[in-house]
Amino acid sequence: SAVISQKPSRDICQRGTSLTIQCQVDSQVTMMFWYRQQPGQSLTLIATANQGSEATYESGFVIDKFPISRPNLTFSTLTVSNMSPEDSSIYLCSVEGTGVVSTDTQYFGPGTRLTVL
Amino acid sequence: EDVEQSLFLSVREGDSSVINCTYTDSSSTYLYWYKQEPGAGLQLLTYIFSNMDMKQDQRLTVLLNKKDKHLSLRIADTQTGDSAIYFCAVVGTTSGTYKYIFGTGTRLKVLA
View 1 (cartoon, each protein chain N blue to C red):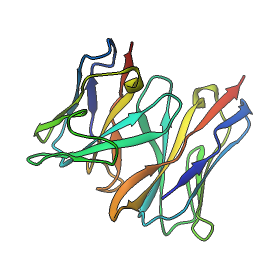
View 2: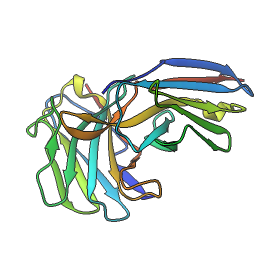
View 3: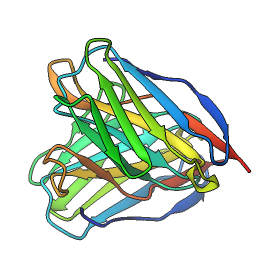
């Protein structure tokens, strides 16, 4: 399966600021996904990012708050804008289509742990 | 689509662990188990094809009961390194589109 890296691995930010999280894959992938995992919770899909098209956001998530870029088949960014303490979470990117299980199987990056003060 | 797991499981080192998952609907070809160690992302642990009822992979055994919509993960000879959160995941339809639906996660604590 693909090797997925994320930067930064963790950060502590002040409310009202923005943070951009990078996700890099070592092979070309069509579908990339961004998830949020709030403390003690399961994963919630924020959006799906396909190269060459606008990201598709899930209910409850909007582009103004979580703008996403997908400039090529190996890279994507998620920005958390105008942060508040409620945005404190782990943010994970995932990709599908690279492993031996099936083209639908998702593989995850190590996550970015964000704390907003 | 709703995927439920018990929140906590505590076992002694060397015992077997059984983590359960129930789901309401699934059109998934595969059903998955992921492991999340503290401070880390999700690691694909194992999976089962939807037309199987059992899959064994070293210390891991996955059981699937499609009639009852029940998935379980058995870890034999549980070690302290198995302490983590375990998520089941199915591909369900939400608002007409296919999505990964993750369970609530089971925190496994292995006592030495």
